[in-house]
Length: 197
Image 1 (tube, rainbow, N blue to C red):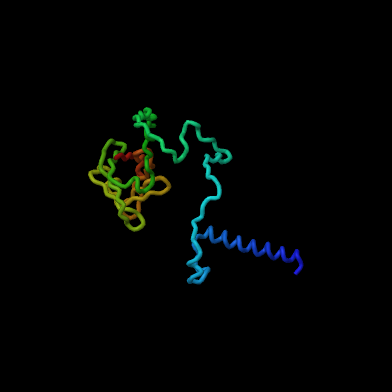
Image 2 (image 1 turned 90 degrees about the vertical axis):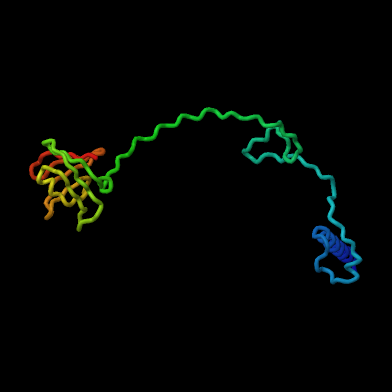
């Protein structure tokens, strides 16, 4: 064999041997590479040892972060902790007052019993129920001296207005919701009508 070929073969054999040793050293004891028997028992198992001195120092902060202040001990250092001093919290910021209550609008906001007062100053009770009555809702009036208002049996809410109905579908009054009251007029006479809780 030529000399250069021999030296190349020797280098390859040496590299393969060193690679095998290094992989055994890093992997720990051999696991199934050698068949069990006298050969495996003869090989000493040596734990991996560092090849040089080990030093530790803090890592540099990542880009964009500030470094740890010098007065703080390194992570993992045995440091005696002084008894903690109670921390007095600063006065809490003043709490803003709650917003004014929002006056609900819509059909559900008018359900319930109302005190109705007509233009003459006469008053009575009008109850608007959430129980359906065909395509309207049930209503009732009690103690109303006004004949039109005393006959109210149904109501509806459309386009921001409350409609009070008599039997047969005649509109007795129309009222618009404003704040916590209903203001409007009786349909036949045009007299004003106000309803409050």
